[in-house]
Length: 368
Ligand SMILES: CC(=O)SCCNC(=O)CCNC(=O)[C@H](O)C(C)(C)COP(=O)(O)OP(=O)(O)OC[C@H]1O[C@@H](n2cnc3c(N)ncnc32)[C@H](O)[C@@H]1OP(=O)(O)O
Ligand SMILES: N[C@@H](CCO)C(=O)O
Image 1 (cartoon, rainbow, N blue to C red):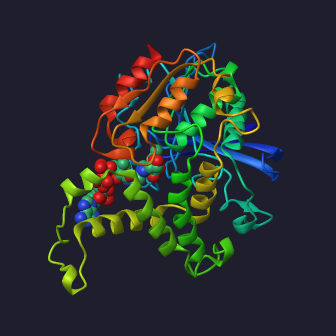
Image 2 (tube, helix red, strand yellow):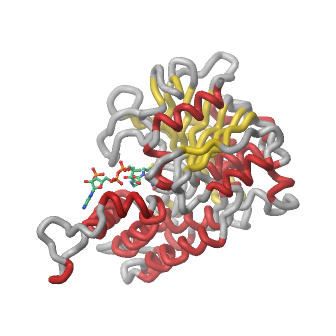
């Protein structure tokens, strides 16, 4: 792979670069990408022996901008800015932090909105699995000269990739932190995803996935998907305590107005529809559905038994989407892994993004 371009916004640490590998990239489910591009950002400096590199894996709607301030063209400050930087848990004075945009995403890496033969892939984009995503990141590591990560770290969908790295390429992962994630998607997780997938595909503006040149995209469907998902990202007690039965401002639900919690979901729906590609949402959601480290490896226990990385597995006590038993299953299966660490928070699944102090302690435990 070669560095094909650099896009720099302001001073570091806001920097996105690209590597492109020409030639066929074969996918687990049988599809082929004629060319692969991975966008990524880095912070810190790679040691001369490339022994200080940390791979940080983002979740479903995240991207490479994990640290630093908001930069033009990006919706927010770094999603783990509290963890990555000088003197922080992922100390960029010590570590070289690499954050790729996931394969199938929409922030620079090859995905459904990328170009194929002069127009976006759209409906032609093939099925991509978490294993494909890890294989693409292994090519990025090769391009950067990193044989072995000091750590691979991620939450939720990022935790799936972190774990898959440790299972697929154990010799390349010295330590791994898997947060609020699972060794395989459960029936419940696939079930929550099902109405989200239907909402997007049922939008009259979806056009089977080939909407890029249409006047409008499937924003309503994507917004509905986000509303459903966002409820699962938070906890019932939090919603009750925070919103209760309050009305939104002077709106009255008896007269067509909204409850405050409905307005809150509307806000998150609108924000996502404004920044994310619906086809990527589908591709990545289905990659989570098919995630199973045990596939074709004799089951989950056999797969986890391959891990040699020092491991910290964390879950959130109020996470209703990735319940703690899933973290316990991972920890029990990895040779030598301690009991799962429990993040205590009212915020549910999203705690891996919010509870920076507790996550920092887990990162420090991992890196010693
Ligand atoms: C690794 C990755 O996933 S990277 C991507 C980061 N994730 C996302 O962006 C996902 C969407 N967002 C979230 O999941 C969460 O907002 C987090 C995790 C990023 C942050 O959580 P919190 O700090 O608890 O934010 P919270 O969920 O309360 O949302 C706050 C927003 O809701 C808005 N809000 C709160 N109440 C209401 C209401 N009644 N009506 C309308 N909007 C409301 C706030 O104004 C605020 O808006 P802003 O984000 O545009 O400033
Ligand atoms: N809020 C996170 C949750 C998914 O784990 C995201 O959008 O990526």
